[in-house]
Amino acid sequence: MESEENNMENSLEFLKESAKKATEELISCAKLQKDDILVVGCSTSEVIGSTIGTDSSIDAAKAVFAGIYEATKEAEVYLAAQCCEHLNRAIIIEKAAAKERRIPFVNVVPQPKAGGSFATTAYANFKEPVAVEHIKADAGMDIGDTLIGMHLKDVAVPVRISINKIGEAHLVCARTRAKFIGGERACYNTELI
Image (cartoon, rainbow, N blue to C red; front, side):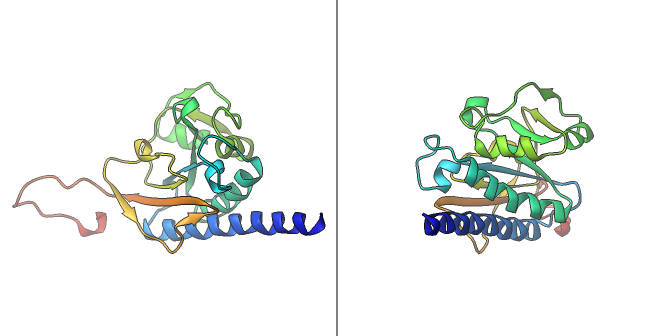
């Protein structure tokens, strides 16, 4: 019994550390700045090796969230947690971030089976959590193929980092860039690429 508990603790610690390292790498690659938004979709079912939407795990959510939240707080970046499809992939975010961007709130409190364990954990840990329907984040992490693209700014660019899985879940990261406009005579600011 004791060795099972130790394995679980080690496993959860590994999830936390993997999530933190992945977040730190993405923040660096994406060149996120203070008050930028990082959106995360996370299927804890996939993290623990099950099929998305079938085996929600609060323990896995707490571990993954802890690593990501630690990294975003250190970088002074807002974390936005995507809910699952049952809440139409609404976003849980700090009230201050939504107010700064004049994003209207919606009224919902995520639960493990209606919103997902990751969004539920974010709601429980944010200072002043609110739900919003849409955001345009500066970068994103998709843990377990949760489809975060609808919450990224218009031009998303894939980012390869050293970690490609969190637990058993496939990890895809993206940053965003400003749109290129104009034709052959246009000049571009390479700092925005």
